[in-house]
Amino acid sequence: MSRSTISPTTHQLKNHTSVTQTIRHSLTMAYRGLLKIRRTPEQLFDVTLQPIIFTLMFTYIFGGAISGNVHNYLPVIIPGILVQTVITTSIVTGVQLREDMDKGVFDRFKSLPIARISPLAGALLADTIRYTIATVLTFTMGYLMGYRPDGGIGYVAIAGLLVILCSWAISWIFAFFGVIARTASSVQGISMLVLFPLTFLSNAYVPVKTMPDWLQWFVNINPISHLVTAVRELANSGVIGWDLMISLIGSAVIVLIFAPLTVRAYMRRT
Amino acid sequence: MKTDDKWAVEAHGLVKTFGENRAVNGVDLTVPAGSIYGVLGPNGAGKTTTIRMLATLLQPDAGSARIFGHDVVKEPQIVRQLIGVTGQYASVDESLSATENLIIFSRLLGLGRAEAKQKAKDLLEEFGLTEAARRPLKHFSGGMRRRLDLAASLIAQPPLIFLDEPTTGLDPRTRNQMWETIRRLVDQGSTVLLTTQYLQEADELADRIAVIDKGQVVAEGTADELKASIGNSTLHLQIKNPEDTAVARQRIEQVLQVQTKMSSLDGKITAPMTDADRVTDLLISLREANIHLAELSVQKPTLDEVFLTITGEDQSKESSKKTKNVEEVSA
Image 1 (cartoon, each protein chain N blue to C red):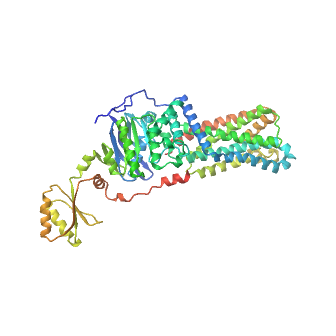
Image 2: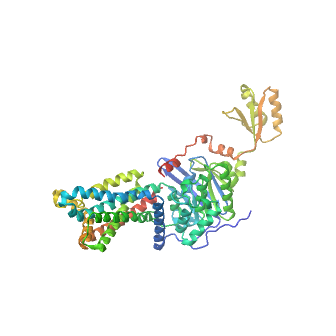
Image 3: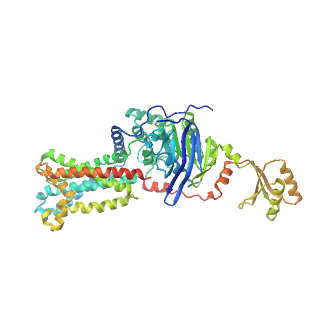
């Protein structure tokens, strides 16, 4: 039997993936993420309901006590709740990544000649749609309740983008947990344990002055506080301040540390 | 960069340890380009682990492997351009449709938007999945999933295709369809390395077979060579009166001058048959001893026997398939 054999010498083969290819692969993987969201829209429940319920709840509970009335509390609480909601949403990224990785399709991704980072980067990129939904809904809720940010629509948009960007950066941390954890529910557990104190021990809900000294110290170095302050400055007075810089630098540092860590852990996992 | 045309796979002394368990313990494999090569072994023999190392999905703890001359550890990204992998459990996206799956894989392999669409359409047609193209895979049967999985491995027309137990769990009709597809692949010029626990499958498809057990290659050759290696046909005798068995075995060993074996299950005596003429003598001898036969048959060697002879007789204790269930629960 004579067969013509497909020989592998048809073109020059390269052992590395270029930056353009990496971006293309990541975008394709992000497209996959979007298709998945479209197929299972119920996974958007949390990002649609949480902003609505939390904003209503916290504003009416704390408004009178902290700022005298609900209306004066809105400029304080809306940026706070925005940061908390969107960052909490980024936990889901880690959880879903864990679930996703347990499926056979990740074996195929690993066997394809694509950039190693792209399945992760794509998943994280697709999830920014979730952050966007949460951001828009929180601002909308605030508007309906009477929040009129003085910074104007432009600065509010910048503030929204900032929160989405920072959440994307933070989602690398949860992606890391997602890759190293054994089950999806443990990812949820660890992540909540980290995030719950971080978001509440900040200036998101309550003025720092009212806290004991030792707590003020922590709240003031907490990166979440800086992000909340940056959002308040942008939305309420249209100021681009030092806190914005700190938030951006912090995000960059997180990505620089956790993206390589996550990819390495992902490669090692079978 | 040198590319070796002769060998699709060359592996030497591959080792992989999971904790205490040496899943693969020094596997050597050479697969000639343009052939179907079967890796045969019981569950847990190390077949899948071997494939995963060859496909760059796992790093070997020791040993080396080359795919068309490219080292799997040093040049993984090149190796990935030369292979297609179809896993034991369908490596496609459950929540997406068949078309979407194929388009995404095509895009990842560098095809343009229109090309990817066309490729997906062609492959679905070729694999008889056009009708189901838009349905999410959740509603696919096992056979359809496998076919889609195989289709996905063929997008880039890779010169080497790994098929890990391509027909496990398929009904006989679907299995035959799968065999047809695999044969067609090789006719188009691909090299196929497949693992299987079915001897019939290896016998039907593979040009050469490696029998693997407890992480090692214990025999290698063509199906005929393997059959020849355990000798000629065997004689199976069932004695009417079980008390006569011991005497019968003595007589057989005297007349045929071979070692006999006793099956503990059904009390059959088996003996290798080198010369058919001697059977006449044996039968006369048995009659003289007043031993009555219940059944007499001659069997040509099957791969089953090769397999049992080589891998020992404890292969019937199969471990149950647990991964599949876990997958479905979480889906």
